[in-house]
Amino acid sequence: MNDNRATLDLDAIPRVFDHLVAPATELIALGLTSRVIRDRCQAGGPWQRLESGLVLLTNQPPNRTQRIQAALTVAGQDAVLSGVDALALHGMTAGRLDGPVHLLVPPHRQPRLVDGVYFERTHQLPDPLHLAGFPVAPLPRATIDTCRRAKAAEHVRALLAETISQGRITPATLRDELDRAGSRGTALPRRVLAEIDDKVRSIAQGLAKRLVQRLGLPAPAWHVPITSANGSHVATADAWWDEVGLAWEVDSYAFDLSPDDAKAVLRRAARLTACGVLVLHTPPAQLRDEPNAVIELLRAAYERAAARPRPDVRVNV
Image (cartoon, rainbow, N blue to C red; front, side, top):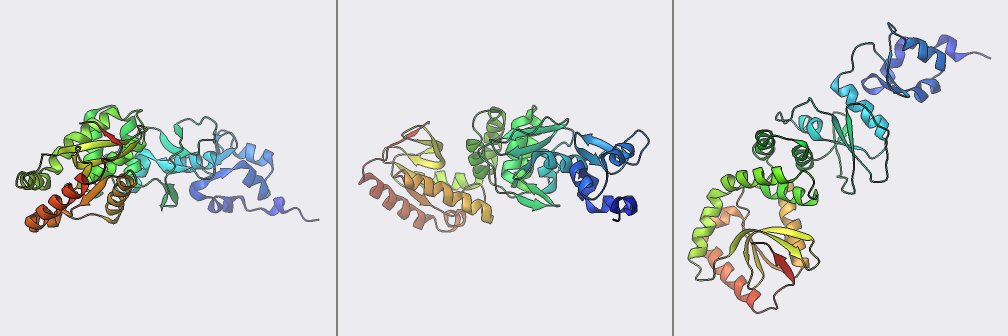
């Protein structure tokens, strides 16, 4: 009986594994013995141990990509890369690659501790994008996850500003992501996002506020978080007439919505509608180019909302 191990080309093995990161069990499946693996991982040998059961098929210090691959291998199926490494793969530069690799894992998963890796168990696992061969959190989630762990306001401000300006993600989409994140680590990004939001919304919202003055209706509250009767967050309305339960989505943060932002607008409107709220959605270009038509729509929407029972929702104004 031929022994395949005797003729195994050890120099060819690194080509089998992504980024030279190999589980020891897979090396054994290829025909290596535990002794061969151990010998090659000795000081001065061609390989090294990364973690228990995980081998780096080079004697050079592991780079960031290899650390990500190792972390994902340890985490197992369904893990998603988030944080600064996800931002970098999205083309963002404001993240600092000096912190731990941040992985999102299913809530039942309990991966072993790994140096330089932060495993976050979550019920809110995002559908990953596949970038550079890795499962990566969408840009809004990666941004908020990074901001939640940042300590300095200037760092958070740079992260959010870059995602909004370069990633074409709206403040409203980031607010929704913050709402889903719960409360841990969100106070600073909420405050900074509010500052940015006030600036990037000023042009279109200025048009909206001037238009409301011509309506002859009670003034709405602006940027209002709305909760359901049981206290769960529904959406943040751009403008809100509490006395009749009318929400106005003016999308004042941008005149051109990306497909993801358009979906976020529709999701907010759907959640509000499901709670019985009447929602009027006005594209920013219409607000700018057809103000008289918008005024008539607002008046009609207000009258319609006033004719119905007020929805059972709560607001913080």
